[in-house]
Image (cartoon, rainbow, N blue to C red; front, side, top):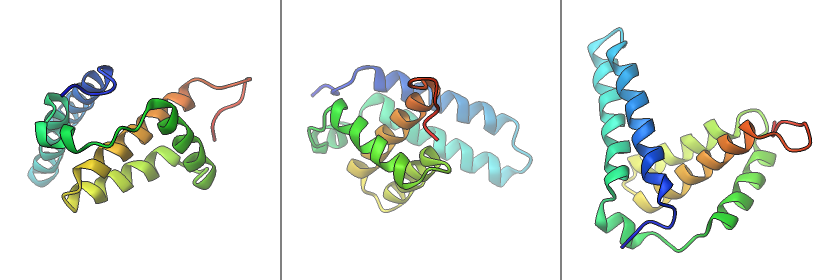
Length: 123
């Protein structure tokens, strides 16, 4: 089964690479191990764990964008960080479907923040 948005795998690989680079600069062994574990999570998403992909609900990009906009209004200070925290909690709970969902929402929030509409930023 294919992902709804093929560019997501590229995004996940980018994130894994960024985290691995940060791990190289970690000050302690504990920080390095934690960052490498996070990089492995991103890589797992990039390769598309079949059970996770099959379990994903069919949520389209338009709906993700709408959710991202609502979430940004709810948490105007730093909506992407809040969405990332939700994703982290879902991952720790073993809920890969919601991890994927919140990761997608965080990604859209970051994209919206980079592309200001009518000269205004998202937050």
